[in-house]
Image 1 (spheres, rainbow, N blue to C red):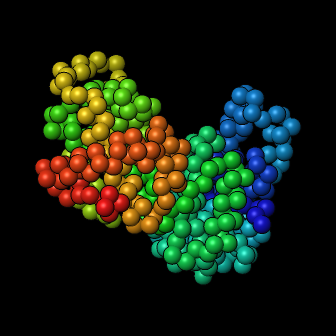
Image 2: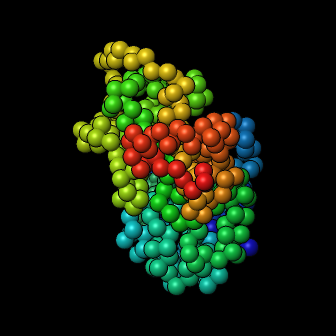
Length: 373
Ligand SMILES: NC(=O)c1ccc[n+]([C@@H]2O[C@H](COP(=O)([O-])OP(=O)(O)OC[C@H]3O[C@@H](n4cnc5c(N)ncnc54)[C@H](O)[C@@H]3O)[C@@H](O)[C@H]2O)c1
């Protein structure tokens, strides 16, 4: 039974995880390396509390209760010594994370579960820093943590059933919907987002459609909340590029970042935060390219079917089940429908035919997954 949670790292994710934990009744200690980082994290957390109060989600009394369950320290050993669950949310660096987990493993009680919020590192490798790989798990929250409903639980080779059940229960208490993915590059959401983003950029590079046509088609016909170029600019092209590069390194050429993306990142045009990415957000008005006249229905099929194919590969590889994949994409990536719901709409015969034709034209990145028989 988890009562006390230690959150390591008081940055964007750590402060959010501490907030949803204390808000939902857990006793929480947040740790960082310097008092100034803790102060920043506490400030972020207080802003979340104030937003909750402003929106009428939290009463003043509840906010006081939340804050009374929360403490913060720079002393890692002290923070984890009586924790039932430790959630790590520090920099995305394998060596630094392993060093921290070795210390946590020594200082935490034997029963404590150790979790990482890594977006891209191997759970199995991180677990080797500890003597309790059965009690090691990925708890991958999405940003902003208070608002995003999804929690991907990432299961290592040695993660026990008890550990999974305990993490599931904590996630549910925190108000999250949990899905399960076996340890694999990109888990569910990042793995499926990347083919769609990549195909959009390749379509642009081939001159088949303009970015405005692609974004409008995905918005109006695909019913996505934002087109891929607007979304990329919003999330940050550096983040998209890093996520795609990790998959390229670990899975292979079908995830190779297109040159257009690489060049934008290398020139510092990383989206809204730098005022320029695929689109310009500065004062200078950039005239859109003349439309190519591409059929919006074709655009949506051509971009979504590679995402659906990747979802089928996850099932083929026994990484996740269809229901969890559909839920993960709807809650974690705001897809209007899950990939298997899309597949039902397109029809499996249509997808088979579409991919067979694409494979003949463009190669094995479009081969039929086993799922399609
Ligand atoms: N930002 C996102 O959208 C997002 C989403 C999902 C997962 N993640 C993952 O969450 C983790 C944290 O990301 P973030 O965006 O919150 O980063 P961040 O830079 O906002 O915060 C990281 C915090 O960790 C602290 N830290 C570093 N080393 C430490 C140590 N040894 N002990 C204690 N604290 C330490 C830093 O001082 C900093 O305050 C990363 O693994 C990232 O991949 C991020």
